[in-house]
Image (cartoon, rainbow, N blue to C red):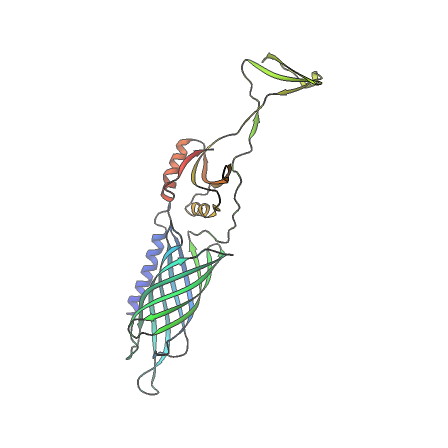
Length: 326
């Protein structure tokens, strides 16, 4: 039975790891963790009243769209746990193995710390059973806090309660976790909205094919005159100031717009796009009647055909994305 549980646990973890990166354009976030904790058995349990140390391995895969929700497969075990048999003074030991499937819900991150809830069910296997203490189904409910160290590394602290279906005992466990997140966006990464990704507009002199209009300032009077385009007027040859008519021309390019925000920080959408492999993600600030509008875009692209090719992949991540020219 122990070999079956171990094999099932490792197989489930491998399946989650492969599923997390099955589509490079839409990867899931996968959190692999090791855990260690202290388990306090129920007072009605025949297992030792001394706290037992549990060690485990688990994987949590999060939804690629709603990143707060995940599914977790976990294994944890304790070895050589003492308990008293029915006869007085006769003692024995049993290994305890647990396999659990949990639903995980992440809360909002504050100062680098992400709280989370989890609940689920599984099975507890005892290598040596006695009357009143047998292998049985279990359910767990708990809360934890996870802190991002950067580079995908995570540490956490959590507590949970386990209910046993047959013996109706309740166990309490407090533990720590250490893990690594694949396809992650580090919570520790700071984000500063970019006011504009457009280059500084360049000033170009627009010359008409027929005539060039100059304005000559003579004291208090301003007298316009026309001259042929073949005629060159140098400022140092006349005492008057010559001011050419100017027109500002800002270069434009094609972008794929993911979303636009007026009051919400666009950091989450930026991180989501980067986690899907799009490195050329920027935020363009634009003044509107409702305030500063922040556009999250991918680009720029020199031609509309290039933007259309990019849009096909981006729509797998954001179905409502579309092409804009800025």
